[in-house]
Amino acid sequence: MMSAVKDEGTVPVTARLAYGTGANLRDLLNQERKRRTAMAADSQWSTERLSRRLATEARAAWRQRLAVMRHEGELLDTLDALVAFGVRQELMERGWDRPWPVYPPRARTAGRWPGSREGGYPEKLTFRLPARLESQVRAACWYTSAAAICELQDWQDKYRLVLPKRRWAPAGLEHALEMYDRLAAEVTTTGAIWRAGVRRGTEAAIRLRAKPQRPPELCPPDVRPRSLPVLGHYGAWP
Image (cartoon, rainbow, N blue to C red; front, side, top):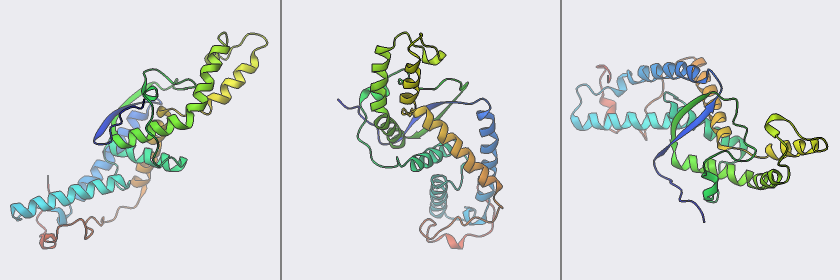
């Protein structure tokens, strides 16, 4: 039996992260929001002296442009956008940005997967990801880890006295720890991908902050409404 996978909308995700991650992200996001505000102040997005219809078109064009920039990593002014961009980059780096079979229900059961190394991350951060992206990550993690997970479950049955978290084994069973480490290294949890996504998104935001600021090309012909070139220089949206 396979799980019912939600493909539309967004879903909440909670990641365990290293200490200080949240404070660092808040600073970066504040800088990106300031950059967004500066972009919005450009006269080409002004709705002053426009008819209601043209003002509605201008706002829709701005929202569409924001969505494109966030998706492409050109503007990372929200936590959701930053993490989603970083997660997509991580999937691309691993070669996992492709369709996967629907994962089984056990891939979403409560508790840690065998081989999980989620300890040592004191901070929790909750964000929302596109449902399709979250499902892609979970399926990729499951199908690249399932064989090792099954072997680890057999290992747990066979070596009940060995304590891998404490790095202890009875005399004569030391080799079991090496076996555990080898199998655990083949397990990739969703938590590892969320952390990698936060890291990659953070690095991308830092690069954006370091870039020389220049007037952005915010109005490609396929985004800006046809009638918007007549906009005057009369201010910007609040």
